[in-house]
Length: 233
Image (cartoon, rainbow, N blue to C red):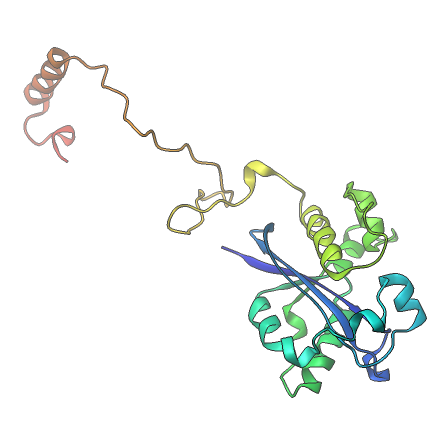
């Protein structure tokens, strides 16, 4: 069962080295590339004002954020949610830089950049020379982003989850990984997981009559003896 976390942040500005902070984190859980509905979202008090551009893009203000928790207060819950699973991020260098600045400020180890899967890099390799913003990719793949009046970390994570699925091969419901009752992937050696036929609550009655069954057993014994494969359980 492959778990990934689609992640996005909103910030007060463009560079944590200039004192800018995270104001929102949004995360969405994927299992076998499919959203489970499990998510993590939090607004944060940055203890500073937002740049004019950040306010315009996010619609957030310091007045709204002043009663929200600070990063140090939510760090444990955030790290527990993402675990060590891959982080699917659009323009990962930006978000990872801010997350690691917040973690360093809280005297915590940073997240390894190798944990990030950068969809911006994937898009530029797949469509060289084409626009690769999240909005451009939503338009390319027919992902509805009409509700994106402002940038929001959780909303953008939901859009990115759909874009990511298209970038890695597109939505194919019949081939989406399924799990059986034991939690293990059910599939064949082709590497594709298929839907399985549910078991019948009541088995169908045998169409073989008692006389036909007796005749068959007698034939097997006469022709092949007691060591026939059919006679062994």
